[in-house]
Length: 152
Image (cartoon, rainbow, N blue to C red; front, side, top):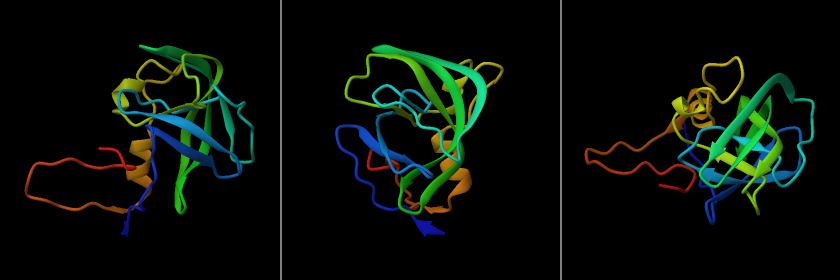
């Protein structure tokens, strides 16, 4: 098992890269939603790791919404921390996300129910991170806070 690398997060945004693409997207970190999507600030660029599922995706937030198409892609959260087969919404419409390219949803999987057509729920970045990457988490006897990606 490897220790989780120290990640730099500021103003609740996070820079995420797709493996086959050198450009980073600045995503708003959202613990109250679970879909990860891009395309609000910069256009999505297909790469050799991108797969268009042909399924529509849409999510409404208190401050805006997005709708578009689901892709499966590889996502790099930090050096050596790569998530394979991650569902990513690619926005054709987005409103209310000025200054961000999209959302990094790290909430529970049940919040993805009904957001992607013909799909019950979508494995989240958090689900895929824990299932694909071996991470040492400190064990404490006291009740506390789990810090993930620099946020608690």
